[in-house]
Image 1 (cartoon, rainbow, N blue to C red):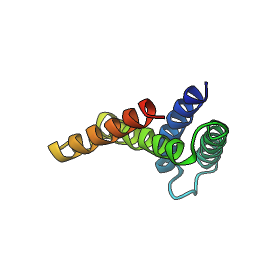
Image 2 (cartoon, rainbow, N blue to C red; image 1 turned 120 degrees about the vertical axis):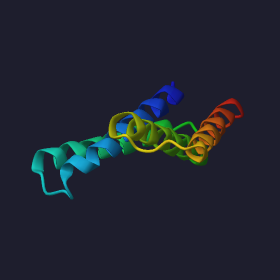
Image 3 (spheres, helix red, strand yellow; image 1 turned 90 degrees about the horizontal axis):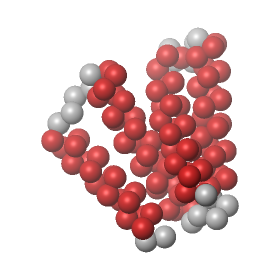
Image 4 (cartoon, rainbow, N blue to C red; image 1 turned 30 degrees about the vertical axis):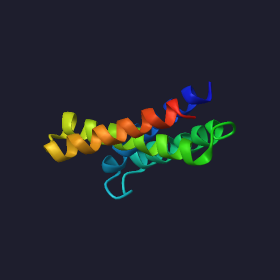
Length: 104
């Protein structure tokens, strides 16, 4: 169950990462509020997952999901470049997340 909570925390972190830019340097009140709520929700969910998962593993998986999700959405939604090097980096991150999960 805590792995599901951790996955949800990572997905909320992805949403949070995408909510930062619309705040326009935290000058827009509603986008800023949304950003802060998503940030707090991601950290709260992470803390719940850490009740039974090792802290290092949980945090590594959390940030890995966030990184992969943020890069993927950047490529899909914002036309960010996708080079062979970035694809290799994503593969290594995903591989690390899988390895962390299967060896815990």
